[in-house]
Image (cartoon, rainbow, N blue to C red; front, top):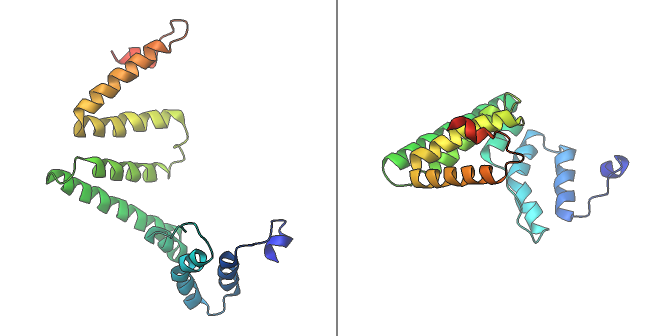
Length: 170
């Protein structure tokens, strides 16, 4: 009923309908909330042939503890991932891909607090300071090959002989 009165199409998936009705009713209060966190993927998967996405621990923390503590849990998770990646790289268990991925997640999460992640200047700064620096340290040959390709592409795509940003760093 709620979907129809809001002008949306009614729920046709029986698993989604069951989940929403139990969640909205609040029959057992907080206990039903905890139960539904565990049972939601199971209920939805029973009624669907596709894979159902499950919530991560940081999403569950944000749902029950609030946004501040949820963000703190995500930051701690990212920091522990960076530390684990550093240990893997130091022990030569990994070629540096894991620490690069974790550093990328951490910096993107931290940049999300400033509201600047959509500006092209911020993206260029992020690329110059984090991505290229990590690639240069972890895989130097790939870094040199990428730089040569970028310079070649910049020269080929110049229009009217205008100065390109690549020419400023020669």
